[in-house]
Length: 323
Image (cartoon, rainbow, N blue to C red; front, top):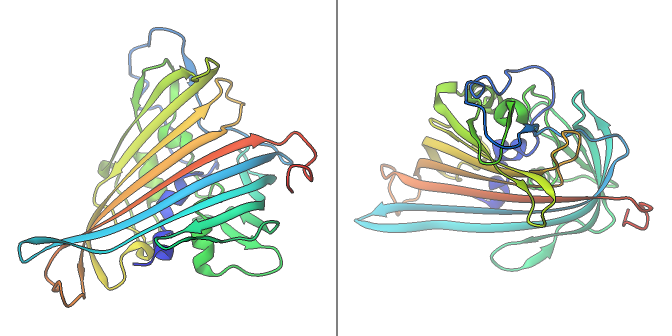
């Protein structure tokens, strides 16, 4: 399994920006029965609107780790481990927004973009190049000025530069709450909404196979300023991953997927989300055509991906800001 194929994990990339179309089941239906919380309460809105023309200094770091192991002749054997990290700095410019105010088309003027594998760190996208990212139903489309990205490079870049898709389910549908919450409150994620989102052509996820929780961990930042720290997680049983992340030469048998996110939000629902992180762990049972293993031995394949994103609003002249 190559790292470029690892980067094709559609679920993880898409959940960094769930679509903002108004259709789909709404979150909060399971949580509204909870008893009122003591202390100040806050509206939990994960979808934060942006505006055409908004610019941000944008920094994203992603790490991809894939391991495979099997018990062969009574001993554990590790196969083809791989590790890749990407650092991406750019000026983000919002060109279009959807009905809920989420970006549907943006450009990234690259300041610094590198990739590191087991051998060395190398330049990936040259400074000054402009990436245009446009929402699609299943995934973002990425184009580069004065040239064309390979399919593998486009897949890889989606891990650090993506916009909400057009599928009709939002982060609020999946993890939001219709009930105001106090620091320390937890509530269940909406399994029906998550199942609807991760289902794709020919692969349908059942809501009974999805579980998850959300928590408002704190209502103030480390510096004492008001900020809502929201964390959430979801696990999918009987998960069939995208074919691009199944190891080369392997046959998929079964799998599960677990995702976690953190967002640091201002209490004002109209304020932007400037700091967020996401991780996803996909576990698979596969068989392999590796002659040293044998076709009947179950192999454990694990894919772990983490992404951290930080935005800073650009208030100065965009040229001076690096665009």
